[in-house]
Length: 272
Image 1 (cartoon, rainbow, N blue to C red):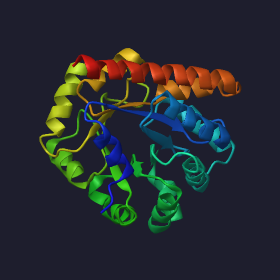
Image 2 (cartoon, one colour):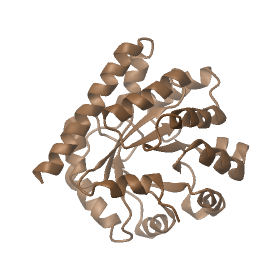
Image 3 (cartoon, rainbow, N blue to C red):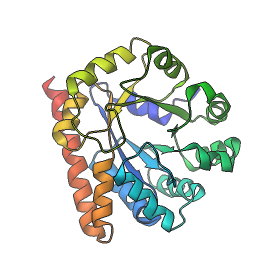
Image 4 (cartoon, helix red, strand yellow):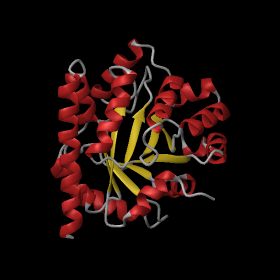
């Protein structure tokens, strides 16, 4: 079986920790999303998590909730998000793309149709925030049939029985939510995260990406010492909210922030 693009990213360089920025598709519009995806790659992104706008993003804080509202005002749909990935693939065949969102739009489209369209467009993985692993098999079967990775969330309060189940069902990577609460929370503890990542890996040797609370180069570097990948979202979405009407400033600030994280993470790899 052909290695997935996500697996290839992790396998490329054992010393390089992956940087996984998140932006909400369609915020402020899909053309801007496409351009930002390319800016993120230039800044050092390895995987891009592309948020599917949803009317009730219950796991997200105010920043990403507002981004979803801005995208939905433009009637951005799941189909349009998938089409945007297809446009991205016209010039980028290496960077992995993960769709991140909620079950309702996927259920409306249909599992098989969703998997087919996502695969055809060049999507690599899917993370459905509100899909319990106990109820995931039907969707996972369709995703697997199309070579798409299934990514799950774990949190500091996830009991071991569920950690084991998630590790059995997940592919690509596991997204460890480093903090209790919603996206945009603060005060990440690198020592605590290190212990949790090590614990997860006692169940399965699958890459672990860590997100929530990563806002700058310092926090990205600290987390990259033990995590396989660093996910950054709310601080980037804040930039879009603040500068979405000024593309030049938006791309400059987005590049500066993400590239600063990339360089700081790379220095950790060299120093260690």
